[in-house]
Image (cartoon, rainbow, N blue to C red; front, side):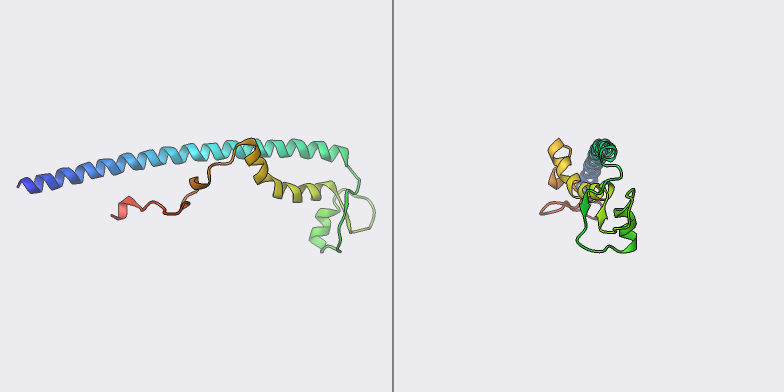
Length: 134
């Protein structure tokens, strides 16, 4: 009898511990997603402000020459807002788009908004096992 009650007690304590860990994990996950949302919003705001400034400075001017004849879809994006028929001319908007893709991650790191490497789900050398399967 004593062993049965001891087993039940340990099982209940394990269940309570798992519930506490799960609630802590949910809270940490919520905090991390809020942090990611804030950092994404700040970076997006910075990129939008810079885009507006550059767009007003380089409106209608070719800022680069493409070393190839782009396909139609790319040409419509790269030649947006430019007069003329030279399809190798590149507008500021297209160049900004290409640069913002490559700069976004570095800008997040520079502003201190990138989360630690191990915070991604499933990240790390040994991911945590699912307690419900044990």
